[in-house]
Image (cartoon, rainbow, N blue to C red):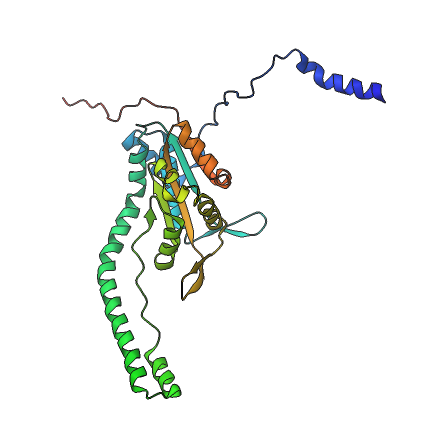
Amino acid sequence: METTAKKIVDDVLQPHLSESPRRLMRELPAADPFPNDALTGILANAAAGIQDKTQAPFAICAQSVMAAATLVVQGHANVRLPTGQLRPISNFFATVGVTGERKTAADAEATWPIRKREAALRNEYGPQRRDYENAKEAWDHARRHVIGTGKGDRVAIKAALDKIGPPPDEPLLPMLACSEPTIEGLTKTFAKGWSSLGIFSDEGGMFIGGHGMTDEARLRTATTLSKLWDGSPIDLRSQWRWSSRASRAAAGNAFDAAAKCCGAFSRRWHAGRTRLAIAGTRHSTRKRYRETNVA
């Protein structure tokens, strides 16, 4: 029995006996190329157009387009997993590139329709807010008047209050995306704004080094974002209110290719590493202009 076991061990180890020791910290193999062909249809055309305009690597353009598209559609559809469960189509994207790779330009081109929509919502929000405040003041005054003139008749006061009806609806905040939120601020925005939000930053260091990623808030930020990624509702608590709301968040962040940024992101959000679509590019020296013959 011992002879048989020794023979098995020798057979396994023999091919490796002549191999020299390998370093514990070895150079990482080259990353897989970005799957350009996997992006089709409108998204592929948009990424190609942004690349043509900005001269940025296609991977960066594609990441920007997919992040923007996720924000647009995540409030309208779910994805059904092979297990039959429904989950949001929200995604987290991280783009790694050196300074000058046109990450900001690619994001700007991909997200300008979102900014345009936000501007339209802001124009509508002003008059809507004034109407709401006037209606709320009238509603409050009507309730105070009913209570004051009810002479303590509980049944009559309740009937009059029921006749006044519920308070007016507050207009939604005109915000579709933010750059460096805290989880507390994000949940408050969900409570008073749209149930679909995006977190976009062309400077990933702002997110990594922001208030939401401090030692005290890091775990809370990570777990809340993970809950949103899973499709779990957020409990909104205040002194007088407890409500649960299904909210969704997409995130797109761009990082300069510095080891401290990538390392910090991995250390500060371990769960997020498995939920991130990360794209990195080698530095390109492509010109940002086209040569034309002006004869």
